Image (cartoon, rainbow, N blue to C red; front, top):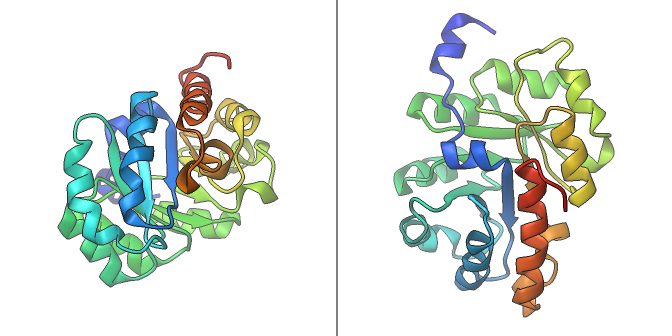
Amino acid sequence: MTGDTAASRPSLPPLTRDGRLVIVARAQRAEDYDRVIDVLVDAGVRSVEVTLTTPGTFDRLPELIERYRGAADIGVGTVTDIDQLQRAIDAGAPYVVTPVTSAGLVDHAVAAGLPIVPGGLTPTELFASWSRGAAAVKVFPAGQVSPGYAKDLRGPFPDIQVVPSGGVDLEGTRAWLAAGAVAVSVGGPLLGDAFVGGDLGALRERTRRFVAVCAGGSA
């Protein structure tokens, strides 16, 4: 990593960095976001990634960013091309996430000053994104490796910031953070059936357990 890259690297926004928990909100419809995100934020979540696989996400994005401003970062996930990335930039997204390793996406985001978290699994993929100025790198799918992978990566890449994603449950959250992950990205193990009419009270309790672990407590 060069000094120029380190100096130009956009950092994860403070709410996301300090909360250490990103919830991947993959809804069936964008109009379903509010009732679930309201519960997540009320239970202590400070960063939610709304995904472009949910129809209508871009239409709702400015409203969601404003609705939760100061309480939670609303990032954009599943970004896979420059047009999508630019739309996220134009909407004022605080960060973006992509499941792929793409020099073009990283370069475009860094040039715009937007924190980007690109996906990858191998050391080559992860370092390629990190060395170009990614705010952090997403180990995806994290279920294919153990939490110790975060520690292994810091051997050759001591400064790399790792966010595991894909199948991370409560115990995995604790283990990845203990191994040095800067944050965890959690979807189904926390959200369960919340987007298909599930019990929001149960969602609140699950969320509080994850938030407590990420805050350094027990759950």
